[in-house]
Length: 364
Image (cartoon, rainbow, N blue to C red; front, top):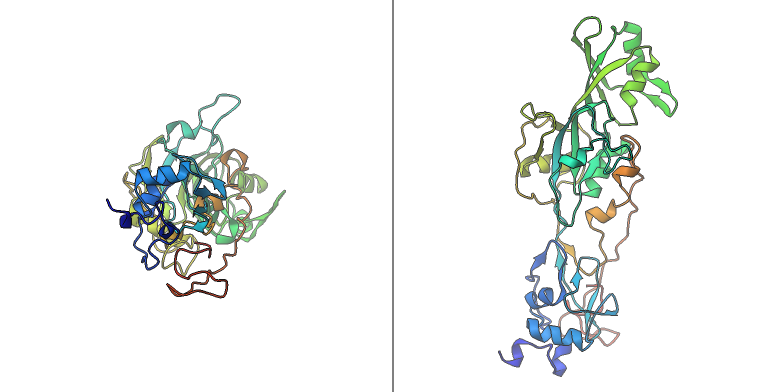
């Protein structure tokens, strides 16, 4: 292959690859080996780029690169001091539904060696499942897991008002005064709590069922609400989380992954979809019956790989299942302001004496 196909190898032209390159470079969705990324984007051959790495002409985050080193969307890559523009798509979000039985704990490891919900989840490569809230040891029903920290945060945080629906079996029957107290608000040790809806599902004696919805998920909130008005909960099953309902065919201890359409609906309900004008957990009827699927994509635009953008997992990396108390959400992730880069015209020099275009020191 002639030198003109490798403008970065050993000639003065190596400092200035094709400045008119359109945004047709490959879009990467996960960390890649440095020399392969640059080769796919047209910056040289694999062997030539390896030689440049060995010669110290390529840096990652202003440190000399190494052969075989992997780079991601938050790495800054320079060739002969010039910043290289790479494009990474947002990490793909996956959501898993799990029917938790009583007798399992929502934690990755338990000092008492009790069974954990994570024991039954499918293995992931470089990602990990994040539990969206919790159910206590004796509770059962729908648990959501996701690979997106941002989505988990939005689904858990009270400001987004994502509803949780529960079937509650109590010993006894609610009086009209007790029903009114649940709807208007009951003072607990961590503040006033209330249900947004309450319906009598029938039963007698120690087998009387009610269906309630709550706009948040504090630790053991349903049980504490009923205890505060003088009734004991003997069984608690979560049947819906936001727009996602427990599929009737999902048996205890089984899991199923949301398909692409259902995932997009959940993202929109959490304010992360392309047409996410509304937020909350009651848009339309809940979805039922997801089937295992291949990795669905997270809605959104592509991310500039050298602009220090936070991916969804990093934005919510402070969400750690073992550190969350019950269903309490962690603090909102910090908002980062990204300065818009200014581009000069291709082939012209700006007031700093540099040429404009994609291949320049402008944050790409």
